[in-house]
Amino acid sequence: MFGKTGRVWLAELVLPADEQLTVDGCLRQIDFLDGEIAALDRALAAQSLGSQEILRLLTVPGVAVNTAACFMAAVGDIRRFSSAKKLVGYLGLDPRVRQSGNADARHGHISKQGSALARAMLGEAAWSVAKTPGPLKAFFERVRARKGPQVAATATARKLACLFWSMLTRGEDYAYARASMTRHKIRQLELACGAPSQKGKKGIAGNRSPALREQERQLARQAESAYPPNDRRLEGHRAGPSGCGCDTGARIFRALEGQGRAADQSPHGLHFASSVTRTHRQPPTHAAQGREHLTFIRP
Image 1 (cartoon, rainbow, N blue to C red):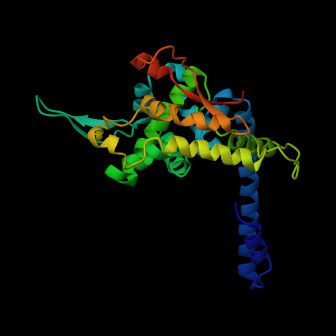
Image 2 (image 1 turned 120 degrees about the vertical axis):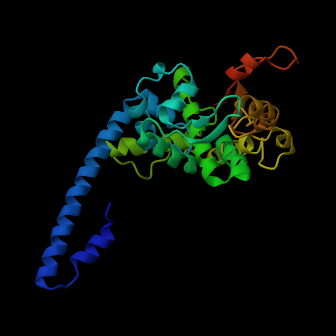
Image 3 (image 1 turned 45 degrees about the vertical axis):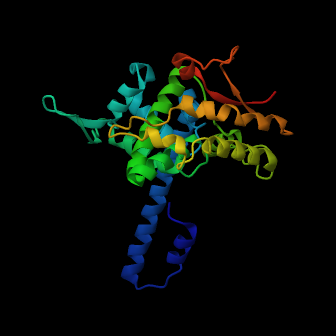
Protein backbone atom coordinates (compact mmCIF):
# COMPACT_ATOMS: atom_id res chain seq x y z
CA MET A 1 0.00 0.00 0.00
CA PHE A 2 1.00 3.60 -0.57
CA GLY A 3 2.61 5.00 2.58
CA LYS A 4 0.88 7.72 4.55
CA THR A 5 4.03 9.81 4.59
CA GLY A 6 4.31 9.73 0.80
CA ARG A 7 0.64 10.57 0.38
CA VAL A 8 0.88 13.57 2.69
CA TRP A 9 3.99 14.78 0.88
CA LEU A 10 2.25 14.61 -2.50
CA ALA A 11 -0.89 16.30 -1.17
CA GLU A 12 1.13 19.23 0.19
CA LEU A 13 3.02 19.92 -3.04
CA VAL A 14 2.29 23.23 -4.76
CA LEU A 15 1.89 22.43 -8.44
CA PRO A 16 0.40 24.03 -11.55
CA ALA A 17 -3.32 23.47 -12.00
CA ASP A 18 -3.04 20.73 -14.63
CA GLU A 19 -0.42 18.79 -12.66
CA GLN A 20 -2.39 19.21 -9.42
CA LEU A 21 -5.45 17.66 -11.05
CA THR A 22 -3.37 14.71 -12.20
CA VAL A 23 -1.87 14.15 -8.75
CA ASP A 24 -5.27 14.43 -7.06
CA GLY A 25 -6.72 11.89 -9.46
CA CYS A 26 -3.86 9.46 -8.80
CA LEU A 27 -4.30 9.84 -5.04
CA ARG A 28 -8.01 9.04 -5.36
CA GLN A 29 -7.17 5.92 -7.34
CA ILE A 30 -4.63 4.88 -4.71
CA ASP A 31 -7.22 5.33 -1.94
CA PHE A 32 -9.72 3.25 -3.91
CA LEU A 33 -7.22 0.44 -4.51
CA ASP A 34 -6.13 0.50 -0.87
CA GLY A 35 -9.74 -0.02 0.14
CA GLU A 36 -10.12 -2.92 -2.28
CA ILE A 37 -6.93 -4.57 -0.99
CA ALA A 38 -8.06 -4.12 2.61
CA ALA A 39 -11.41 -5.75 1.80
CA LEU A 40 -9.65 -8.71 0.19
CA ASP A 41 -7.31 -9.02 3.18
CA ARG A 42 -10.30 -9.14 5.55
CA ALA A 43 -11.99 -11.81 3.45
CA LEU A 44 -8.78 -13.85 3.28
CA ALA A 45 -8.23 -13.55 7.04
CA ALA A 46 -11.79 -14.66 7.81
CA GLN A 47 -11.47 -17.61 5.45
CA SER A 48 -8.12 -18.59 6.94
CA LEU A 49 -9.36 -18.46 10.53
CA GLY A 50 -12.15 -20.86 9.58
CA SER A 51 -9.82 -23.33 7.84
CA GLN A 52 -8.10 -25.90 10.02
CA GLU A 53 -5.76 -26.80 7.14
CA ILE A 54 -4.49 -23.23 6.70
CA LEU A 55 -3.98 -22.79 10.44
CA ARG A 56 -2.02 -26.03 10.50
CA LEU A 57 0.26 -24.88 7.70
CA LEU A 58 0.89 -21.63 9.58
CA THR A 59 2.71 -23.62 12.28
CA VAL A 60 5.69 -23.85 9.90
CA PRO A 61 8.02 -20.92 10.70
CA GLY A 62 8.48 -18.74 7.64
CA VAL A 63 5.16 -19.71 6.01
CA ALA A 64 2.70 -16.81 5.85
CA VAL A 65 -1.04 -16.87 5.36
CA ASN A 66 -0.76 -15.96 1.66
CA THR A 67 1.36 -19.05 0.98
CA ALA A 68 -0.88 -21.37 3.00
CA ALA A 69 -4.11 -20.04 1.45
CA CYS A 70 -2.70 -20.16 -2.09
CA PHE A 71 -1.50 -23.73 -1.56
CA MET A 72 -4.90 -24.89 -0.32
CA ALA A 73 -6.70 -23.06 -3.14
CA ALA A 74 -4.53 -24.81 -5.73
CA VAL A 75 -4.58 -28.26 -4.13
CA GLY A 76 -8.09 -28.45 -2.69
CA ASP A 77 -8.72 -31.75 -0.92
CA ILE A 78 -5.32 -33.19 -0.02
CA ARG A 79 -6.82 -36.70 -0.07
CA ARG A 80 -6.83 -36.50 -3.87
CA PHE A 81 -3.10 -37.26 -3.75
CA SER A 82 -2.09 -40.70 -2.53
CA SER A 83 1.55 -39.69 -2.08
CA ALA A 84 3.69 -36.60 -1.73
CA LYS A 85 5.38 -37.46 -5.04
CA LYS A 86 2.08 -37.08 -6.91
CA LEU A 87 1.45 -33.73 -5.23
CA VAL A 88 4.92 -32.53 -6.25
CA GLY A 89 4.20 -33.57 -9.84
CA TYR A 90 0.83 -31.78 -9.75
CA LEU A 91 2.56 -28.56 -8.66
CA GLY A 92 5.25 -28.90 -11.33
CA LEU A 93 8.15 -29.14 -8.87
CA ASP A 94 9.37 -32.52 -10.16
CA PRO A 95 12.43 -32.61 -12.48
CA ARG A 96 12.06 -33.52 -16.14
CA VAL A 97 13.52 -36.92 -17.04
CA ARG A 98 14.85 -37.60 -20.52
CA GLN A 99 15.99 -41.06 -21.59
CA SER A 100 16.44 -42.78 -24.92
CA GLY A 101 16.85 -46.53 -25.21
CA ASN A 102 19.34 -47.96 -22.72
CA ALA A 103 21.10 -44.65 -22.18
CA ASP A 104 21.29 -43.16 -18.71
CA ALA A 105 18.39 -40.97 -17.71
CA ARG A 106 19.07 -37.24 -17.61
CA HIS A 107 17.32 -35.05 -15.08
CA GLY A 108 16.72 -31.46 -16.13
CA HIS A 109 14.77 -28.48 -14.88
CA ILE A 110 11.45 -28.80 -13.10
CA SER A 111 8.41 -29.51 -15.26
CA LYS A 112 6.52 -26.32 -14.20
CA GLN A 113 3.15 -28.01 -14.66
CA GLY A 114 0.09 -27.07 -12.64
CA SER A 115 -0.54 -23.82 -10.80
CA ALA A 116 2.21 -21.29 -11.47
CA LEU A 117 0.95 -19.11 -8.61
CA ALA A 118 1.17 -21.91 -6.03
CA ARG A 119 4.63 -22.83 -7.29
CA ALA A 120 5.77 -19.21 -7.05
CA MET A 121 4.39 -18.84 -3.53
CA LEU A 122 6.20 -21.98 -2.40
CA GLY A 123 9.38 -20.57 -3.93
CA GLU A 124 8.99 -17.33 -2.00
CA ALA A 125 8.28 -19.29 1.18
CA ALA A 126 11.47 -21.29 0.58
CA TRP A 127 13.56 -18.12 0.80
CA SER A 128 11.72 -17.19 3.98
CA VAL A 129 12.21 -20.52 5.77
CA ALA A 130 15.87 -20.43 4.74
CA LYS A 131 16.27 -17.45 7.09
CA THR A 132 14.50 -19.12 10.03
CA PRO A 133 16.44 -21.50 12.30
CA GLY A 134 15.33 -25.09 11.90
CA PRO A 135 15.77 -28.24 9.79
CA LEU A 136 14.46 -26.54 6.65
CA LYS A 137 17.21 -23.94 6.85
CA ALA A 138 19.79 -26.69 7.34
CA PHE A 139 18.42 -28.47 4.25
CA PHE A 140 18.62 -25.26 2.22
CA GLU A 141 22.24 -24.67 3.28
CA ARG A 142 23.28 -28.23 2.40
CA VAL A 143 21.84 -28.01 -1.10
CA ARG A 144 23.22 -24.49 -1.62
CA ALA A 145 26.73 -25.69 -0.74
CA ARG A 146 26.54 -28.20 -3.60
CA LYS A 147 24.41 -26.56 -6.29
CA GLY A 148 23.92 -22.90 -5.49
CA PRO A 149 21.09 -20.83 -4.01
CA GLN A 150 18.58 -21.05 -6.88
CA VAL A 151 18.59 -24.84 -6.97
CA ALA A 152 18.46 -24.86 -3.17
CA ALA A 153 15.36 -22.64 -3.18
CA THR A 154 13.60 -24.92 -5.67
CA ALA A 155 14.55 -28.01 -3.65
CA THR A 156 13.27 -26.35 -0.47
CA ALA A 157 9.99 -25.48 -2.21
CA ARG A 158 9.61 -29.15 -3.11
CA LYS A 159 10.46 -30.08 0.47
CA LEU A 160 7.73 -27.71 1.69
CA ALA A 161 5.17 -29.36 -0.61
CA CYS A 162 6.08 -32.79 0.78
CA LEU A 163 5.95 -31.42 4.32
CA PHE A 164 2.51 -29.89 3.73
CA TRP A 165 1.23 -33.20 2.37
CA SER A 166 2.48 -35.09 5.44
CA MET A 167 1.03 -32.56 7.89
CA LEU A 168 -2.39 -32.47 6.23
CA THR A 169 -2.75 -36.21 5.65
CA ARG A 170 -1.67 -37.04 9.21
CA GLY A 171 -3.58 -34.18 10.79
CA GLU A 172 -0.50 -33.00 12.70
CA ASP A 173 1.10 -29.60 13.21
CA TYR A 174 4.72 -28.95 12.32
CA ALA A 175 7.06 -30.83 14.65
CA TYR A 176 9.37 -27.83 15.11
CA ALA A 177 6.61 -25.23 15.45
CA ARG A 178 7.31 -22.16 17.57
CA ALA A 179 4.19 -21.45 19.59
CA SER A 180 4.79 -17.72 20.03
CA MET A 181 5.38 -17.21 16.29
CA THR A 182 2.27 -19.18 15.37
CA ARG A 183 0.13 -17.24 17.82
CA HIS A 184 1.44 -13.96 16.38
CA LYS A 185 0.32 -15.02 12.88
CA ILE A 186 -3.14 -15.92 14.14
CA ARG A 187 -3.40 -12.62 16.01
CA GLN A 188 -2.64 -10.72 12.82
CA LEU A 189 -5.52 -12.54 11.12
CA GLU A 190 -7.83 -11.67 13.99
CA LEU A 191 -6.90 -7.99 13.76
CA ALA A 192 -7.47 -8.04 9.99
CA CYS A 193 -10.98 -9.37 10.63
CA GLY A 194 -11.74 -6.43 12.90
CA ALA A 195 -10.90 -7.80 16.33
CA PRO A 196 -10.36 -5.05 18.93
CA SER A 197 -6.77 -4.07 19.53
CA GLN A 198 -5.37 -4.94 22.93
CA LYS A 199 -1.99 -3.33 22.53
CA GLY A 200 0.06 -3.44 25.70
CA LYS A 201 -1.67 -6.49 27.15
CA LYS A 202 0.78 -9.35 27.57
CA GLY A 203 0.17 -12.74 26.01
CA ILE A 204 -2.37 -11.63 23.40
CA ALA A 205 -0.10 -12.06 20.37
CA GLY A 206 1.78 -15.06 21.75
CA ASN A 207 4.78 -13.15 23.13
CA ARG A 208 4.42 -14.85 26.48
CA SER A 209 7.90 -14.24 27.86
CA PRO A 210 11.33 -13.40 26.44
CA ALA A 211 12.81 -16.46 28.14
CA LEU A 212 10.35 -18.84 26.52
CA ARG A 213 10.77 -17.25 23.09
CA GLU A 214 14.53 -17.58 23.41
CA GLN A 215 14.16 -21.20 24.39
CA GLU A 216 12.07 -21.84 21.29
CA ARG A 217 14.80 -20.27 19.17
CA GLN A 218 17.45 -22.39 20.88
CA LEU A 219 15.50 -25.57 20.18
CA ALA A 220 15.13 -24.54 16.54
CA ARG A 221 18.88 -23.89 16.28
CA GLN A 222 19.50 -27.26 17.89
CA ALA A 223 17.43 -28.94 15.20
CA GLU A 224 19.27 -26.97 12.53
CA SER A 225 22.72 -27.90 13.83
CA ALA A 226 21.97 -31.64 13.72
CA TYR A 227 23.35 -31.79 10.16
CA PRO A 228 25.54 -28.75 9.41
CA PRO A 229 26.48 -28.10 5.76
CA ASN A 230 30.09 -29.21 6.25
CA ASP A 231 29.25 -32.37 8.21
CA ARG A 232 31.66 -35.14 7.25
CA ARG A 233 28.86 -37.68 7.53
CA LEU A 234 27.44 -36.18 4.34
CA GLU A 235 30.63 -36.69 2.32
CA GLY A 236 29.65 -40.21 1.33
CA HIS A 237 26.04 -39.31 0.64
CA ARG A 238 26.26 -36.51 -1.87
CA ALA A 239 23.08 -35.93 -3.78
CA GLY A 240 22.95 -37.13 -7.34
CA PRO A 241 21.30 -35.42 -10.31
CA SER A 242 17.86 -36.42 -9.04
CA GLY A 243 18.51 -35.29 -5.49
CA CYS A 244 19.01 -38.85 -4.20
CA GLY A 245 21.10 -39.08 -1.07
CA CYS A 246 19.68 -36.06 0.73
CA ASP A 247 19.05 -36.39 4.45
CA THR A 248 15.62 -37.53 5.51
CA GLY A 249 13.58 -36.59 8.53
CA ALA A 250 14.39 -39.92 10.15
CA ARG A 251 18.16 -39.25 9.97
CA ILE A 252 17.71 -35.80 11.46
CA PHE A 253 15.54 -37.30 14.19
CA ARG A 254 18.21 -39.81 15.21
CA ALA A 255 20.81 -37.06 15.46
CA LEU A 256 18.51 -34.86 17.54
CA GLU A 257 17.15 -37.51 19.85
CA GLY A 258 20.09 -37.46 22.22
CA GLN A 259 20.61 -33.71 22.05
CA GLY A 260 17.10 -32.79 23.20
CA ARG A 261 17.58 -34.23 26.67
CA ALA A 262 19.43 -31.17 27.93
CA ALA A 263 16.32 -29.05 27.40
CA ASP A 264 14.44 -31.12 29.99
CA GLN A 265 16.31 -29.27 32.72
CA SER A 266 14.94 -25.91 31.55
CA PRO A 267 12.82 -23.97 34.06
CA HIS A 268 10.00 -23.88 31.48
CA GLY A 269 10.03 -27.62 31.00
CA LEU A 270 9.98 -27.38 27.19
CA HIS A 271 11.65 -30.31 25.48
CA PHE A 272 11.59 -32.57 22.47
CA ALA A 273 9.59 -35.77 22.64
CA SER A 274 9.10 -38.62 20.22
CA SER A 275 5.82 -40.24 19.33
CA VAL A 276 7.64 -43.59 19.08
CA THR A 277 8.36 -45.45 22.32
CA ARG A 278 11.42 -47.67 22.11
CA THR A 279 11.59 -50.74 24.35
CA HIS A 280 14.93 -52.03 23.02
CA ARG A 281 18.24 -50.71 21.79
CA GLN A 282 17.95 -52.02 18.26
CA PRO A 283 17.61 -49.39 15.53
CA PRO A 284 14.00 -48.81 14.47
CA THR A 285 12.67 -50.26 11.26
CA HIS A 286 12.23 -48.11 8.19
CA ALA A 287 8.46 -48.05 8.70
CA ALA A 288 8.88 -46.86 12.28
CA GLN A 289 11.28 -44.14 11.17
CA GLY A 290 8.64 -42.75 8.84
CA ARG A 291 6.21 -42.36 11.72
CA GLU A 292 8.62 -40.54 14.00
CA HIS A 293 8.08 -36.86 14.59
CA LEU A 294 9.11 -34.31 17.17
CA THR A 295 6.74 -32.08 19.08
CA PHE A 296 7.01 -29.38 21.69
CA ILE A 297 5.32 -30.57 24.87
CA ARG A 298 4.94 -29.25 28.36
CA PRO A 299 5.03 -31.86 31.18
